[in-house]
Length: 134
Image 1 (cartoon, rainbow, N blue to C red):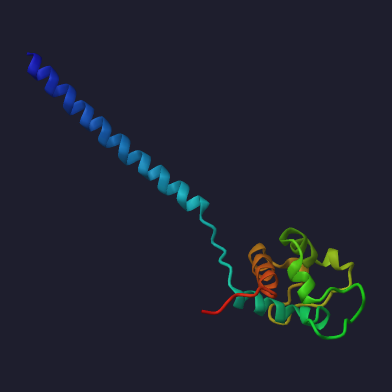
Image 2 (spheres, one colour):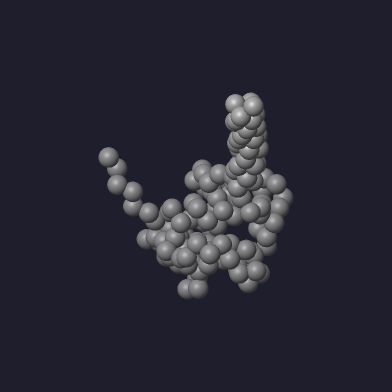
């Protein structure tokens, strides 16, 4: 009698543990999918967006004469904090000076997606970085 009770208890415990482990694993996988960001940062993508918008027309490379005293060079933009740079990308921070449309999609600078803004910010922040070559 005692042996049957112990056997049933152990079997019940094993079944309980088996279900507990499998349900927890599904929740972890679901949480992992929600936390994964679909936007990937590529320098090439940032360069493409930069070319389409025409940022190089005003924000020149270092060593050239400034277009205007209040327009920063790429070297100065790359030294800027990422959050400030992200705000600077929008047309509102350009004080209405930039109203051209993108050549490829007909979108204005203000209508860039969050992923495009992040790629552009990543490209500009990486512009003046000195990476040692092996």
